[in-house]
Image (tube, rainbow, N blue to C red; front, side, top):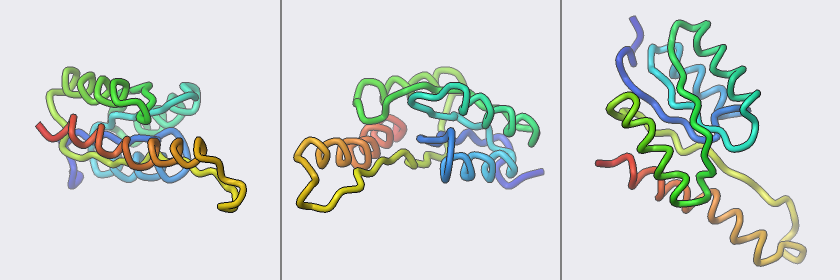
Length: 128
């Protein structure tokens, strides 16, 4: 029996890197996983297969968390499917590797929208 048996976790940016590692750690403790991805369904399915191998369940949730409507619809879909969210990991994030001299206003706004606004949109949708 894991520490998170019966719990539902949503991880944004879950199909690779740190997000993947978080998903696998939560699944190993028994959590059911809302597995958010933006572009690569193939990568997300591979992580979902790893979750299944750990004896847990994953629900694939394609959404662009940098867009308010998309992020909120993703949270709603998970709650509609599994009735709740116990753990929310706002992991999705991007970078624009440029010096400040080369960084454009659009680059800056894209990073802020992805890395900060997405946290608000997902968290505020999950709180109720």
